[in-house]
View 1 (tube, rainbow, N blue to C red):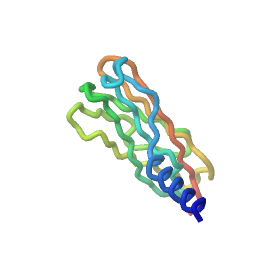
View 2: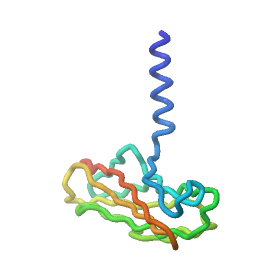
View 3: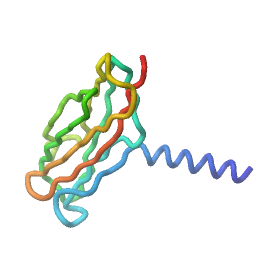
View 4: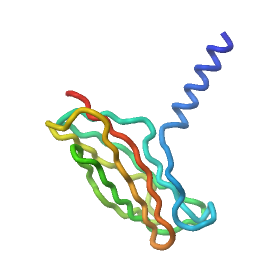
Length: 135
């Protein structure tokens, strides 16, 4: 019984913590002067001919006060809107992406690549997967 409870607790913690994954750090060299891009860790399904909304976030260090340009690229078969967006230093860190699969998109996994470039400092990127499924 204790083992079953421990397994359930571990899975719940993994689901709670594992909802978003962060890429490598960009911006300044010190941890509090940089940022990371948080993307969904679990693949998101989108039906052929439909659209799905996902959230991408900037995890800013305490001292990181720069605007960051996000550029989003996908593989052929799915589309994303917007393909680029400025996240201002004073804005909320969450960006809503609308990802659509064409009616004739091949079923399977597709990669979405997000690159964040600050005004000064190093860019960083993160990837996540989208799965096209039958309607």
